Length: 134
Image (cartoon, rainbow, N blue to C red; front, top):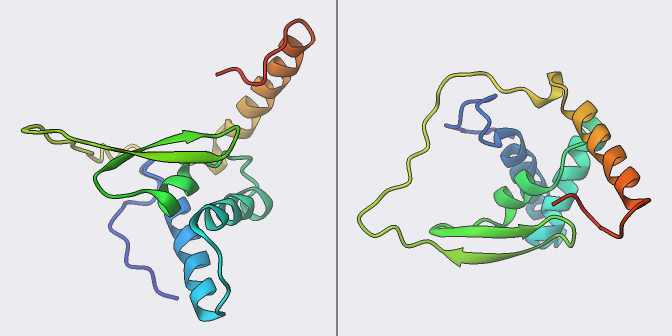
């Protein structure tokens, strides 16, 4: 499988999620295995957790699998549902720039921070009825 990618790896623009999603989508086509876009996103996230070891959420994979050009995606990570919202910038443009600052979640404290916030949520839930910290 050959990937022609113009998103710099480690740029913080979800390049690993895009590769995971495109690899799974290609395998589905090659093996005639029907998976809808949300299922592809979930499989990609599972691969990141189980094989890369990063206890990531679903946002990056969902954006890669389910994103629609010209739309923002409102993602409910708890329910794992999304809806597309048309973007109308008029005379304005959205610019995404590469600052060349490396971004590597696998080598960061991401898993540790996630564990700490999950522990904080469990502690708060002993006092009040909340589902998430959001």
